[in-house]
Length: 202
Ligand code: ZN
Image 1 (cartoon, protein in one colour):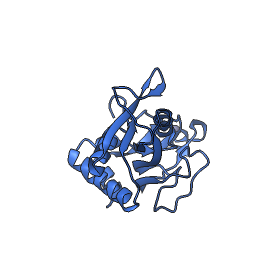
Image 2 (cartoon, protein in one colour; image 1 turned 90 degrees about the vertical axis):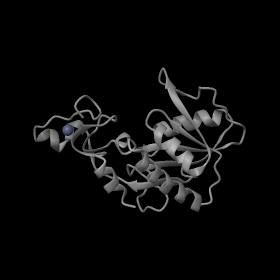
Image 3 (cartoon, helix red, strand yellow; image 1 turned 180 degrees about the horizontal axis):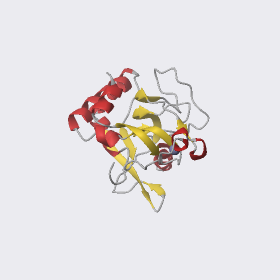
Image 4 (cartoon, protein in one colour; image 1 turned 30 degrees about the vertical axis):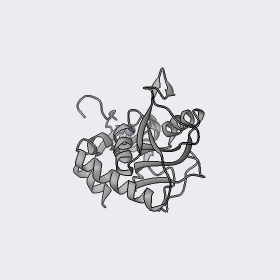
């Protein structure tokens, strides 16, 4: 499956000059919401991810996604795996599990994001799941930004990866484009201005 092409075709892999949530600048931006706006595409991607997870033999009771980014990917993946789908959300900056979602002791939970950069949000949500008695058995994402090593990829884990090394991380594709600090950004030096993706006009 050519995941890059699917992202390009959906205008979900943008080229320009972007200011990322980490404050770094980049020539590219992944807008997974755009690739998931077509339910058929979401289903195809989630099924491919589910096949890889099933092939590993990992047993999963529940998929948990951090809102908002992971919601659609998490639901689509849970559907493809035929397991329960829940989500965590931030309230006043703190990741929490609300909405009456319950987790039983020892429940095997797979964390799911649309994109894993360093895995920070996924792990914040994972700690909440663990505090409620759940066991995190793996992490999944449609796309990997290349800081963490996923199953079946040669890319090595970078120091800023926050995912634990003792559980598997599944993703369909590595998107390892460069990021620059604003002071060292060659695009800024060329005189263009970084825009925040998702803001008006993008
Ligand atoms: Zn720049």
